[in-house]
Amino acid sequence: MIRAIRACKTAAEERGVVRKECAAIRASIDGNDQHYRHRNMSKLMFIHMLGYPTHFGQMECLKLISSPEFPEKRIGYLGLMLLVDERQEVLMLVTNSLKQYPVSRNICSAEMARDLAPEVERLLQFRDPNIRKKAAICSLRIIKKVPDLAENFVNPATALLREKHHGVLITGVQLCTELCKISSEALEHIRKVIFAISLGNVRLLTHPLTPSTIALGAWNQQQRVAQIWEKCTEGLVRTLKDLANSPYSPEYDIAGITDPFLHIKLLRLLRALGEGDADASDSMNDILAQVASKTESNKVAGNAILYECVQTIMSIEDNGGLRVLAINILGRFLSNRDNNIRYVALNMLMKAVSADTRAVQRHRATILECVKDSDASIRKRALELVYILVNETNVKPLTKELVDYLEVSDHDFREDLTTKICSIVSKFSHEKIWYIDQMLKVLSKV
Image (cartoon, one colour):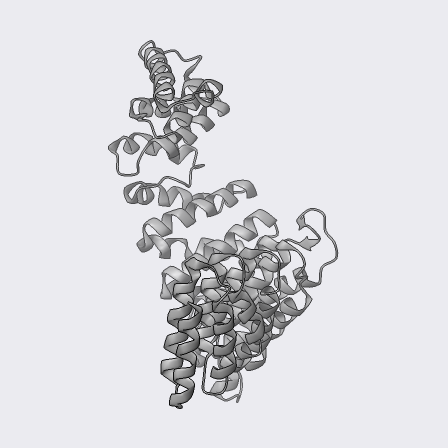
């Protein structure tokens, strides 16, 4: 069927082939042909991706899901995700089957999430680690769909942070991160539980995390809070440190980088824990500096870790030295041959300007070169960044560079470039002669 559709020369010819196939599939459905049911569903999914109506095959998804055979069940769930909309009532018929086989995380209505939440919560404590991993993935979908259910998953999610199984640990970290974003109560509880795990003191789980509940001798309040957050992130920091310093491990290695996916998940969780709290941020400074300085930047996986590390550094509470290090990493990204890496670096530098303008100014020459890049999106973003960096000190050399480039710039880019130059000249022109001179140059080169 696919070969026949691709061989069509016109849209009308394609519609004819699809119409003939759909008629054959309808006849097979009416005849309750069980032998070809899964093949018909595969055809319907392809037809659906071409944009043709396939609603007549929705009930076939339910029949395949209820099949005892795994290959047919798998095709049924895949068809359910593609052919059935979350708002349709037919989903109510599949809820019981999902309770028995919770393998689908890509389709979930709010009602279905509420019905399945207790079952998924139970599976988070199941003996088989593969089941716990899949249950954690399902939990992510549920709390995104119904944030009110987040508190039900806090305790099971934090328990996953003790796991030795790699798959369970990485999904557990991701689940805890999402809980921190959704609920401030969950964030405080996860901080408290991580602190208790690090100390090995289970009694702390039953008390709020305040200086009065963990008085440590005659320490003053500031010392106590600093000690709390040092312990709070200790377990996560230790795991991240082990990853950063670990030797070559082929099991989770990607292009010579050890387990970049777990690296990134841990950095995101540390970001959630450190944001808005100076003591928590301070406790993770050393490991963030270590990851930023030791990770290789000549590999895609290494650049992904560095990018997440930069985002974490820029999100947690202020640390001048770390932020300079993060901005220098972004400066190196600007020299990368990959357009995607340069583009995300420019985006991050746009955010970093408000935090440390001086550090970003050091990379002004490289940013200016990006204005002349062959990629239109990079040119536009770099021009916006240069416009932000202009001040009383550098306005004349930057304006000269932009005016000189105006003559050779692409026609499509010339309008934006001219607008920015005129705006800069008008904003910083304290000398009328200089203002007139620049305007005449722009007029002569446009």
